[in-house]
Every structure is written in C-alpha cells, then in structure tokens.
Length: 85
Image (tube, rainbow, N blue to C red; front, side):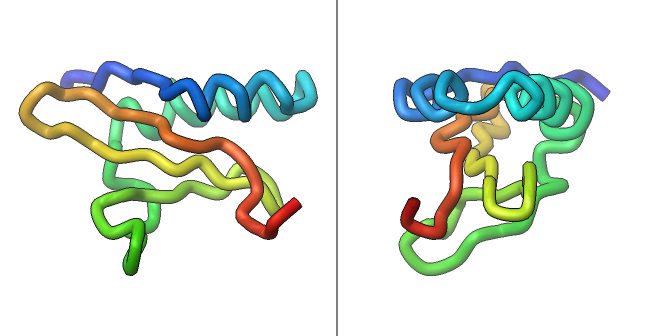
C-alpha cells in the first residue's frame, strides 16, 4: 500500500509548535506510522466537521485531518485540545 503524503495547515503547524517535545514526537510517530499508512483509522467526525477524521494523541489532545483520496494527500488541520483551553 502506498503511503499518503502529509501536509500541515498553518493552524496545525502553530498547534504542533506549542506542544511539549514528547508530544511533538508522538504527533510525528502517529502521522508516519498510522495516518499515512491507513488514513481512515481515525474516528469519522460529524456535524460541522463532517468529512474530517480525529485521532487521539493524549487524554485531551486530538489530531484533526481530512483525506484527499484522489491525490493521496492527508491535510492535518488541527493538533490540539478541543476542551476550550
């Protein structure tokens, strides 16, 4: 299976830069080992985020991304908490 290319939005880059080093390493590992290999392994989101997927990074942090199947590209939109902090 061909791995998908991963692209980060400006918001995702900002989110990742604000994480602790250990969390940054986990994001990199999850993106390379899980998401790029099987982009549909995340939870399908509903409502305003229909078409997006979410993967848990820690108790409160989530990776939110979308998939362009035709171009084999994963767009990472956010990488942070959704609890309003």
